[in-house]
Amino acid sequence: MTRALLLFAACSLWGQGPNEANYDESKVGSYTLPDPLKMADGRPVKDAGMWRNARRPEILRLFEQQVYGRSAPAPKKLEYEVISTQSGVLGGVATRRLVTIWPAGKSPAPAIHVLLYLPANAKGKVPVFLGMNFNGNFAIANDPGVPLSKSWMRTGDHKATEKNRGIEAARWQVEKVLSRGYAVAAIYYGDIFPDHNDGWKDSIIPHISKGKPAPDDWNAIGAWAYGLSRAMDYIEKDKDLDAKHVAVWGHSRLGKTALWAGALDERFAMVISNDSGEGGAALARRNFGETVNRINTSFPHWFTGNFKQYNQRVNDLPVDQHMLLALVAPRLLYVASAEEDKWADPKGEFLAAKAAEPVYKLLGKEGLPAAEWPGIHQPAHGTIGYHIRAGKHDVTAYDWEQFLNFADKHWKK
Ligand code: GCU
Image (tube, rainbow, N blue to C red; front, side, top):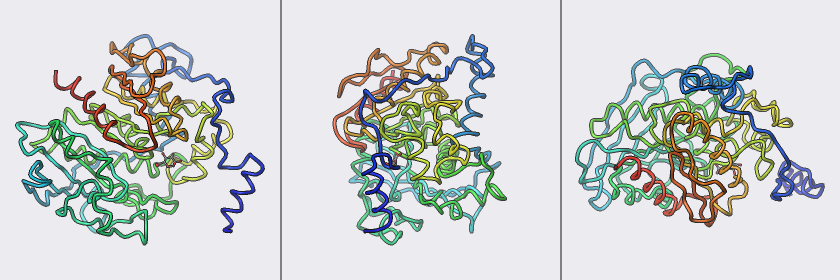
């Protein structure tokens, strides 16, 4: 038995180890969420102006200082190159465009590769679903024309192989999204920050922020979110794309990232979290599934150094995740959960979305039209959308059907 396994076994026997998680609703306990509509000094947020000019920046600062870290400002001028445009791909339904972005200036600094699919029959500027993938751009569809990634891979010997081509196709549903009139944009998270404890040194961060990291400096999630914003910089330059209608989406750790990107960058008109759980859409104070302590222990490279202070005292956090969701207001927000994904605390994801609603209401928006946690396969679509589907931690055709219906409802009036 390995040391890690022994530790795990011992901790499980004692019932108090790092891997222990509560899945019993009666043991969640009581908690009080910070009020998004009350300033840190206690003053109530009276109107949209006070939210915009005082409370929103205050909450954003708190998430930077305590949770995700301070990111670098956007580069003064985006360095990028359109590598190729090829029509008639994916069996004729798409035009593929490959673009390279150099976030810290041209090589040898790191490059972010953008893969774009436009509907073949597109007329005018096309709205976009922008997301990040776990296995390289060549993994999101069965398209032999996408080069293998040269960046670090999470599996095998950390090098891309042909056998991973298209392995995320079910999660991306590219043909379905195109058939509904949307473009797909993808970037690979490994181009930006290799997802392991030592990833920092091979990430974009040391190329952009010089010197040793401060306790409130950005880390993997901050860097990935930065990558999404640079892809958005490019989308703004592409005449075929409708930069006013860009949905940023992500699954799991990349769902946490999509939320943070959407909070920081108000150019994203829609923000979609799929099964993002702890550090994403799920309330941190609700003791169900993964905890702050657990996530900081397993993934010390995701959040800012300061976040670790809350491992044993989550109730002292000056924010909770409903306030991250509220930072998306008045823009479109979608939170998706999966029934069997207890680790991500589906109910905590719903409650956070619901607790963001007062901010939407203050800004004159509908919020989330569900008084109670909806049943399985009963999506609720207001300005905030939510559904919980049957099944596991994943992105499925059902999830996409809801995201597309939500986008159609708001964007195809
Ligand atoms: C782990 C982690 C989660 C994360 C997930 C993922 O399960 O604990 O916080 O969302 O990985 O990204 O797949």
